[in-house]
Amino acid sequence: MLKGNYIFLIIAILMGLQCNKVTPAGFWNGFERKLIIKTINDQGPWGGNRAIYWKSGKQNFFCSSKIIEFAAKNGWNFIDSTDFKPKEIRSWSCDKQLIFPLGYNGFDTTMIDENATNEFPRLITSEIKVYKFETNWEVCNPGTKKCNTAFGYVITNLNGTEMAIYHLWGE
Image 1 (cartoon, one colour):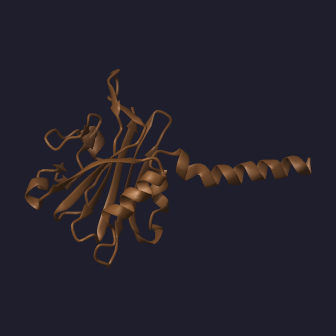
Image 2 (image 1 turned 120 degrees about the vertical axis):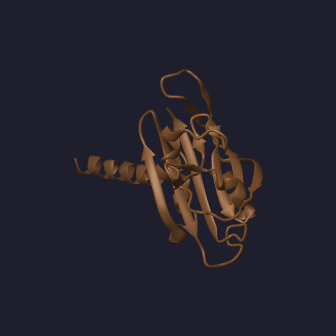
Image 3 (image 1 turned 135 degrees about the vertical axis):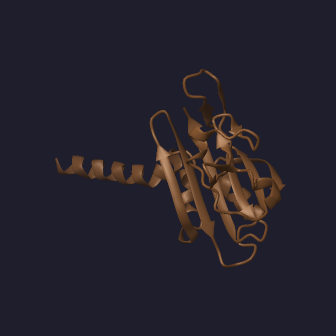
């Protein structure tokens, strides 16, 4: 009986260590952990979302090479990046709250999906760079059979002192 308890304990420890790898975008919790300011995480059996916000006092701390390398080591493959001026992101809001416009149809700055975007507050208000990553997850419009690739997004301010990730998957 004692041997069985040890086996159970070892399995539980291994599962706990792998938890960040198993949940979508969970690995980001291990990126510069001490600088995380805010985490939003709602994972369920049919879908979920994750948003994490970091802040550093050091200029250029969150640089593209560091972000892309960490993402790649964890299965997120870099696709491209786009710069947005403050004037362009001013309209990214829902119910007077600043948001990152990620919904069931993906990242779309012209069509705000209120059902999804309420989970994605945008804390960076200055000029930003948005990095898009392939994640090997899917997102499906609830109640439909329309599914798309669930891309992951990382945004940074241009001086590299702030960073956030956004990911929506499932239904």
